[in-house]
Image (cartoon, rainbow, N blue to C red; front, side, top):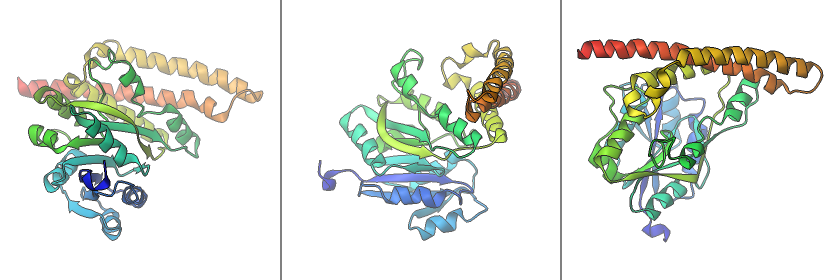
Length: 311
């Protein structure tokens, strides 16, 4: 297909207080080798220089005062008229071929309504960042290769690295921004799969890089958020309900095992047979587990409160 025949695409970046990463993110998007595209940044009521940086770099900048990326993306979707709409997070950086790979994957399959790309984590500098990168938290390959584990989905959602046909957005509508300020992917893709004949496909060559996170506090908060969302919205993620029994006990058991692992690796480190990152890994896994326990308990309280209101 010639460049002239390729469909126009909108790239949407929902950004909140992203001045530390937005310039680099936009550099990679404006440098895409897919010429027929626009870049839309939705400033989600930032209190820093995010909006000014995006405007200075030539992106189309929209404002969305309601907090949360679901509302921000909905704002862009209503603004855009492009037949394809791609999403990327403001703390991610795309390879030059990223958009072209997403578009090619969708066009190659008439049933594809959404293509999800591969997200890797940049190599870090601190022990925490190196641990985060080594975990490869956004790797979808295990789900794609094991459809049974994915509960029949051909590919799980990839909220920060995907592209949709406009027909899907028009048929299903936007994210539920009234209920969610984050974590809206589960509900949206369930609605998408139930209400249309379109499917989600995996485009492994559509590669982006996520900035490396790097603190114990971030690990705890992120794990707590994911665990809480999983409980509150369990109906949108098949298999979550089955994992709830014994969840706290399992994670506390993980903490105990990590403690033993830390002592063992620490002893090996003292005699030069282990790396510092490997010694630190059990500590970070313990923090993840404790955050998951906290988030799970918070989620159960929130779910019970919601059931009480519904009753």
